[in-house]
Length: 248
Image (cartoon, rainbow, N blue to C red; front, top):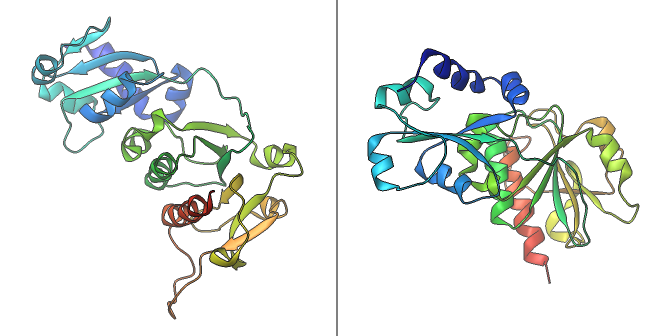
């Protein structure tokens, strides 16, 4: 059973500033919770219904059986699903660019659904690091965690001053930018490593970051559509697919 104090402690993690203060976030649903239990993340506590607990004979130091009504009270989902876990933030936020890395850099991606989908896309294509500007949506927002479908356990998320980080890279590192005036990606020379910059949903890549792009690429339109650009997550998937298709 949840006390009023415990209920409050869990619900404040719906809010970004309290997640950062407590260094904890929420993961919900059997599949996603299991992904975190099987990962290097430290699961602080588990709140689950009797059905989930009977189906998962799990030994955990801090596991609490709750009712469906109590789960509804701490969940952000319209239809809560059996189990909710409180997970500790990862211990490190260091960026290590290793030889052969293909890294995604996000310049102020603001929609949590887009960010969660991009994390899932990165995992699908074996990209293990995403570097985010500090203005990018919080990777540990419950909506992002949910949209990533467990991929967050396999993709390292780093928040930093993106402009400074790009400037610090070895001059030999190719920085690709998805831009409307870029070269057709299917006709461009693509290396198997480097950094792919994805810009903001409405404004694209900021002017400061544009100056650091060394290879401008675009996804060509095959119609007379009046659309100016693709959804950020969709564009990320297409670009990553082409990079991986070219990989020796």
